Image (cartoon, rainbow, N blue to C red):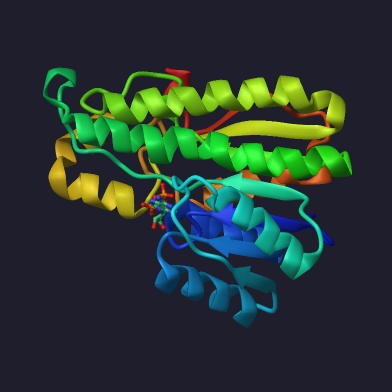
Length: 248
Ligand code: ADP
């Protein structure tokens, strides 16, 4: 579904990002694997190569000003094109009431979960606007559509990702570029494993009608679709993949 395309995936060292990188590669794209962790990014790239896919890595902190531009340039240097991006790197924030959140934790969520998505899109859109085509998927969350009790910094940032994605979609539709937010529900990942340890009752309380968490691969299938030419009329949406959680 993605033959001939070159696609950036950030946060590709684990969880949804790794599953996305593997699925995008399996669908025929060349993948620029990026993560703050070189070790886990290398593992993802080697899994792609073992499966017969094509991957390069370029690692760094998505919240560092300048990194997004470097990542676009590295992709162009490696693959001579950029067709799509899955801006997925994210951090969880400590569980706390709004009145108890540490300012540094709120700032960190804003920097990595929200501002970095703008930095990434700014660099990607500048390039894609020149080429006249492209597709971007930004990982938000169902927490970007509804409240996340005891995680306001996360929810606020993810609501911001939905707003950024819709706005980019409207601004860049005339240039042939599609932008969507992806809103996964409860998904097995480093983040949710840590939450299960810290507050199992909280996870139980938010189990969706399907009564299980998603596997990252079940989220990645939607990423492939959104980046593909099967979705050429689909833009500006918050696409929810949540086992029915927001249906009730
Ligand atoms: P999920 O499955 O929801 O993506 P994970 O915690 O498993 O959750 O994955 C998040 C990924 O994002 C990790 O691989 C992590 O290293 C990466 N990441 C976190 N912060 C940054 C950052 N500032 N820059 C780049 N990657 C980051």
